Image 1: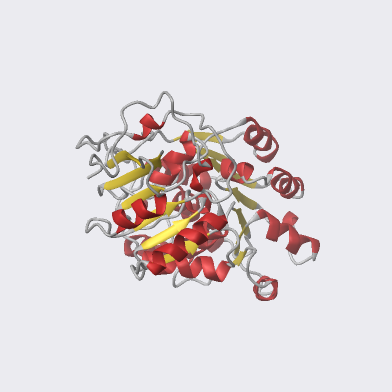
Image 2 (image 1 turned 90 degrees about the horizontal axis):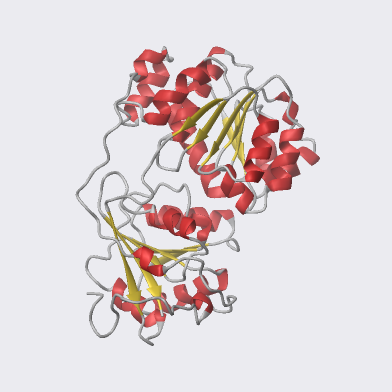
Length: 396
């Protein structure tokens, strides 16, 4: 399909330049620091050697209600990070996990923390995440795993009214999940006292630093009490993350979960525009029968909105998520896409990490990602749960 005269796979990109600034409607002109030919890779039938878990969930002496909820979630055996992290966390050790999303790390820290809270009803846990969507997702996972217990939670994120969050905090929830800016706002209003939390989780730390949260995260860490149990999760460990790590943890257990850089079950290709308009090419692709559930990434918020307007005129059902949308709008867009009420989710890189959306058939890079690492995170939204997926990238 991609080799015809309209749009075809390129063969020589030594002269490639992003002439249109990524097509992002006002985006700066940039020259990528990678060769787009890296985006051409066929899916294979090869599989990684499956991890053989040493433990069963029942080996961790977890609360019966927690074990029942694990079963209801369909978790049969621990993943690598769950197998290796749960016991030291139950023992009260600090843990540093270097692992990508999709490795099961959310349950890896939630399971022992839920157990800890069930043993001691005075235990309070704080989880800090970079984006609102991830915070909502983690809190939802917590509610699933703590079902039929007395444990309560609260989400503290921007984009929605702070009043309802203050009301929840007044009920003294066992677990608080939030983004750095809103947590600091609540702390300044004296609605949260960071020193009362004896267990802290910093998750997706490298993403928080990418988003400019260095000062916010450092400020939160400086207000934490000691001794405490500290959990630190990141896909990579850049210098800034290592600085926070040194002040945040004490004699931690280090876990590194090896994953392949690009899943074998994602078929990757480029779409050469050959002078054609991007919107026209995208519209033609989306009307293909195999494009059932498509995530389209663009660089700018304004550009995403213009794409959405054009596709709606072409009778394509779409939802939009970017930083200018309110939290209720963003959550509604995600829910519509997850529940197959719309065919296409248009997003900036705010949706490129962590979000667990089932059965995405295609990821389309309408605009080039800033880096190859960003590309890997984008396409990782498809080809999940051992299903095949396809990733396409537009180039001039």
